[in-house]
Length: 105
Image (cartoon, rainbow, N blue to C red; front, side):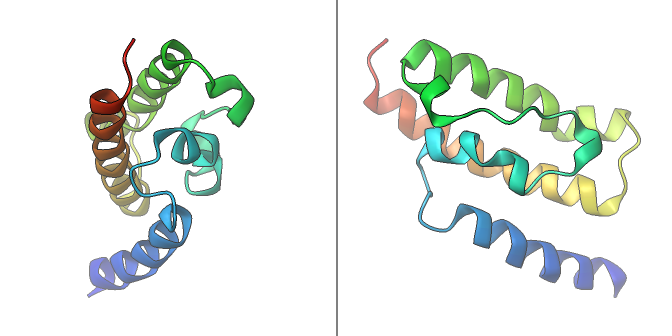
């Protein structure tokens, strides 16, 4: 029951964060701080730092290291944090695949 309530609340937050940015890796990465919890260690990145394909790749790697579900688990995250990490990780991965198919490095 608690897990369902957590997921409903968090799904709303995550959807609100991703709304209009689906598949847009730069937009997702530049707003990641709005959906992650403070203790995860994510440092906000501005859109101007995500101009080149190489910089996007670097920031994406950093983000996945920060929120990879296995890493979050190792850091002793709570249920909510694990849930957020999982969902955000999937959205970023989707956007990364789209970005990769469109960008030529």
